[in-house]
View: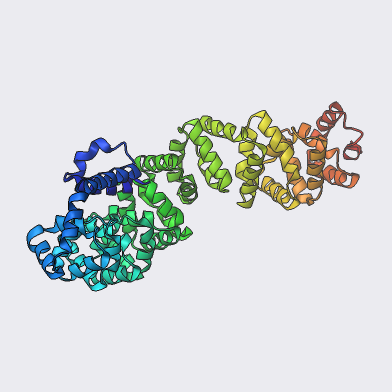
Length: 521
């Protein structure tokens, strides 16, 4: 459960105990579920203690006309006594008695009533009466009582009450204290878009201080409504999103905000990622801390992918200091949710030493993880970013990658060669080929053989630039005569180097296979 739920439960418990939330600071180790259980047990204990006495009063009241009982209840016994006996009598009689009482007194009774014990009475209460009581409670600012009853009212009654209560502040404050969180989705569904928008704008008003309530409403909504309300917020002036993010940091409720952002459209997520405030190290620390402790990496990583480089660099500085077990969780999420490109966008901005630490962790994972990493980067068109990382892995991981790559589909391998050619990453390819077996080397040889003369020229230039002949020659030895003749043409500009290259071929024992390459030497 989120920190917002903890806050709501603390306020409700303080109300029950007749104290302030601050006085309950000693309960901070408890989560929201534990606080709610404590509150419910205290309430149940109080009702159980007085139940025998109130049962006798309920039985005695049957001897008197309802009109007289109602009058005595309101004028003599008071709201507490009436609230206690309401759940002990048949619902039809309780309703009849309530019709003979004033709206203001029923509002007093509602404050003291245990909704669970009187659920049948609440469900049978006429809509007009519920609306009248709701308006009084709103006027009193008693949103806790309002929230306690939502779960026991039918949708038509809730709809009537929301139409009567036109205050967006009242709506947000009531929703914050709703006990039956599952009712919030239907409650949101009753609201027109214009009211959702006006509620967001009210929360963003510096003078309202209502982001706590607005974020709590969004937090408990299902993904469809998180997206709807989140996108509405993003569609407003940038100041609205800034205000929302500032509130999340001030309240330290990123555990509620990240899932909201995670449900937004890509357009809205880009707006959030571009907020200047996200580049603040304290803010990113708070966000990453929430992702770490509440398993929200799948919500955070896509957002990182949309951040400006300056912000991503700050995020990288935070991530690189995470403990090993946290990094492993991060890697697991990136793999299971196919978010490798987003993680790599952070990884490439880390300090070299920390980058190597994370790369080694990736290399320690099983073959399926390495395979998904490379295929995910291929889908994102990012071979150029993953090959240098694979080269940084420890020997066993490089060996695994070397044996995997040649078995990828041909279209994947063609994209790989295209990227290597464009970015001159031949050293990264040949670093892998050094760990390949005969079958894998033959695949690479066949792949290179398909390329045009211009690419072969660039390949030769790259190989000579980085002195990669010991790696290329074993691959070339697997090519047919026609391809070797193309290579010989590409070697013409290196006539002064051919003798040295031939010497390396002789040293490797490849002259028989490479004869056409040096035929005229």
